[in-house]
Length: 557
Image 1: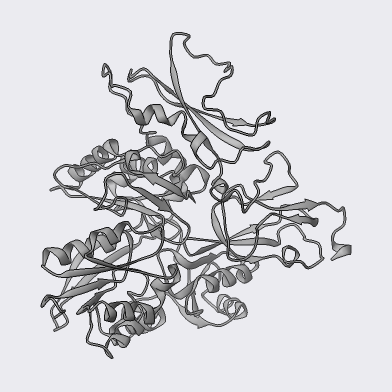
Image 2: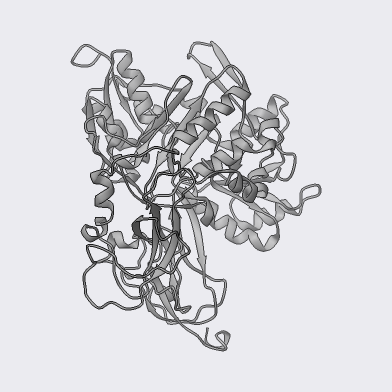
């Protein structure tokens, strides 16, 4: 027991799962402790006590987490999912303290966390598995693929991967080297294995979850259909993520304010989310690059599949997410639910990728208007037209902005329209309180419109540290997404040498996954973008470098 005579649990996680565990523990009458990092505090507001970590990496630091539990007098530690939840070092370290680990024993976790040990256990129990082996080099991948009965495609995996990270499907030998490096970079333990890839039409992803009480009683929760997925991660249950489906599901980082979000409710609808503070009503949450893109889970329950599907569509219709910065996959979720293949159960693991255009067309833009309803203009609406004058937007020639025009009328047939504008000349070094100009449109002359203007890059968050690329200059290379720089080409680190088309120019880490930005042409680096170095987070549109073209780079390498 703790000093209060009650059980006290430290939840070694963040986001919606931390809130779920904290709420459950509170209902049991336990005291709760959260751990958190700067700009990611929402879950901690639900706990009785909180410990601030030095950085995001501390979520994976066994010593730091154990010390937090000991110093706060906890009797138990719950790992949630991800992070250290599958690391046997955590429960092993806790055996040296009085803190009880809420989860499997170290030996069980060792078998479950190491995917090769799991494969060996399954094989010993006559469970059919795909051929595979541990690897230490790209050459071993090639050797495995050349074995009789194997061949490409093969799948390289991190032993400790998860959530779609540390996995690459390799379709041909030329892809091996890069895939091996990326998987190695995404594996905390730097341990990989390779197996025959079971991909293509007809292959499904089915999970079976089990629960045990530590004394031999075990049960299961039946089958779980996880085939509707992208990047090896399921999206159903309804996982609302901060990703733009019209830009290859790129993460959209930024701030989300309380008035921009309203979740559905009603019988059979459960919403698990980290968006919101238990202590204040007017909150501001930050979507960054360090963690999962998950914003919320909409979990729907009904007597039949058909009723659950209908209720899920209703919940998505009621969902309000009006952020102009952070985009979501809501339209994809709706399109999946409306698709005939989903409704009759004929999906496989590549179904979403094959059918994405149809799925997006089936989903709506969620621009709900109620015919005949007149609503008063709120102060929030009026402030929207002046918001940028108080913000941190970078105003310079070449900057791209999105202009959204929303009809002031509430007629159900009127819709918001989106435009893109480019600034070509700046005459005053300040953004105007109001925007005026001439729009040549086919709009009704009687209609009135309100507008919102948002920059098409998130680089403005750190405008003093970085420089935006000119999108009209093909020699200026920009970051196509928001991400942390983990590797730079030697030519960007001061080495005087040329770059050939296709060489990795910069490698960004986004949600623990690595993305390679390749050189689009042969050339030399005329100059590196301001502030670009390993370890910094670049916003979308940030200038990485400026190229200087040569006709024959190979002779100068």
